[in-house]
Length: 439
Image (cartoon, rainbow, N blue to C red):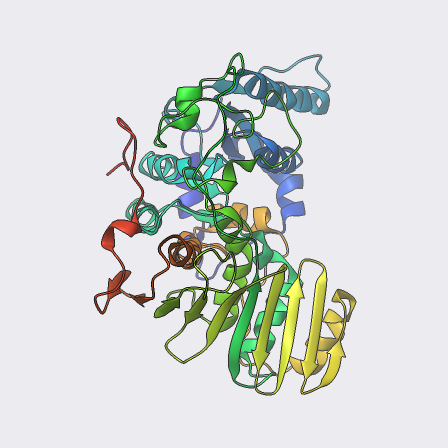
């Protein structure tokens, strides 16, 4: 039986000492008794949460006790995966320690669940995450954080009100090539930044998919949730257990296209490098052509221009050099002289150009492990909800420039349009009854 004082222990463990004490994950794995494991529920168990769940199953400091999914086949598959994993580890013939739910609200009612991992389509993130915070759960929520700027701020408010630990799944922050790139920028190693090119895909379109016969065992009404009512199509919710990322993200009712999908990673790094995790641009300039899928410009208050570009990756352009970074890729110039051409040069670059750095950024080698450590220490993780909110708000502003093809002036402190530009209605999306953001 679980220790009823476990949450009290987790919350007060750090208060007993004068400085944070974070054990490496291998120590927790070796010494964490069952009564002190972090109990987890997974909501939305498609491809991404399947990966996250398998990661958690390898950690002895966690216990997966529940899964939630509106598709019966995927729900039962996830439950079976968990139970078979624990049965194999225990040497027992079978295990029935993981419960399965169709409705996330039933999972959140459980008092024995410490934290939830949310990897539903984007249009569900805000309602589920706010409900989880109100239920006293710590949260790992996949990127992009929300479907609107208003939702993002509501998520921050709920997390702060309930004193929850929240990690946004923008896991590039826990990769060394991105951290070192941003430290080079923040320490002036390429001079004053003039512009940043962010290469990600284009914006979303309204869903125009034809109706199909519904997948047996799928609660399609629940899949839609707050999104507009429409007929089923397997592009949105693939049939059965699948191993690809569904294309619902290409449609405005459920996602924001490449701008929010990859943008939640790459605009996030641009914000980190510019030191704008608590802020954002002050002006958004649409692309020249109304049908363009690239070319929106974001202007920050110091004149730095962030350009939505073709391709994939981030390039920081400075008066004295540049840094180009992507997953597994790292290039660094001072003037016209190339100082690094691959990720393999990171150690040498750090040793030579950051040895006396005045700005050192949060270093996390393990995005999931960082969240678990934060749950125990109650210190905010590397990609806290505010970071996720600021990043997705940048992505939404870019999309709004494509959707409406208007120049907008923005106050990042109040998160409002100014100068008689924009429209306050653009800051949120409609919610189909009876769904609304929890208070």
